[in-house]
Length: 458
Image (cartoon, rainbow, N blue to C red; front, side, top):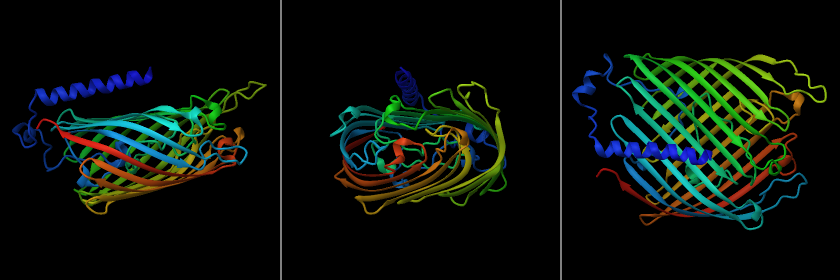
């Protein structure tokens, strides 16, 4: 039911946007109205800095970006993994899987609106563990609307329903790198287990002066395991948050600012729930060195309060634990004609991402994509996350995740793409039974897809 409601909302936005595109002729960017309302004493509007924008860095090299296009196709993927189920006994189970996934995407751009919609349903079949066969759902929407020359509304939502988090079309584009300070923690990766994840944000920015901007942002995430028996030691979790920021452009290249952030982080173990609330005050700095290169850092104090569930058999509510901790982070992005590079690091209180409670997380990730020749392209991505649980009395489920992904893609003709890749995953978490005896996973995959694109309004 939730999925049906969400798709209905997306389809409503899609129909409304396409209707507006066809039924009206938006003003051009150099029109008299646009010039009259342009902020004084500046040639360009301010950008929303990555620490407060909530958006991900681009994952395509610029020569692959298109606007006002309808895209679609069909992908067939075969994969082999040496640790399909995880194991508490040390006997890893290997398996091969086969999936088919149609996909459709829409990119609409006007002088006021930019809308990206991607949807990829599909089916996955396992050769040995047939009980994990599943109908997959993979969808995302990214929406930006300039309500006036000074006010911009943005929203993003991503949803994945699958028995394998890696089973997505266009794996080479799957690395999500963001400089935002409020991001869901999906670094704890379950093996072939039924999983539903959903995350999103909505924000509004207002440039009230030529070089000053304020804004607000709301975020949420949900992680749900329909069959807990498949993931012993992991639990459902959710988060909700909000922030407000002020940004000052001190020159064409340099931005500084401050933000206040609040988050509610909840994990749902077998009895009760573990809730952590955080308050943070961050200062940030962003350098837009060129149109394709940017660098951002943030830092400041973060305060957390957590409540443990009642301890049986006494059913006495333990006292609230609270502490101050420093939070810092940084990110960088470079997007060239044939190459795209993004990297990020953060030290911050975050949701448990399946662990028993919220964590103090150190996380670093990087991704690079390169157009090698006219027909060949490659990608390389990696990440490291150290998750230290804030509730040691509930069991030492702290640990770390190390992941890597390398892939190579070949265009065959105008519409056919062949892709092959390798994923390496190493996870060590105490008292998480599904990882205890088999912390390593290796996955090889090959995919062939048919793609088409059609221009809109031409």
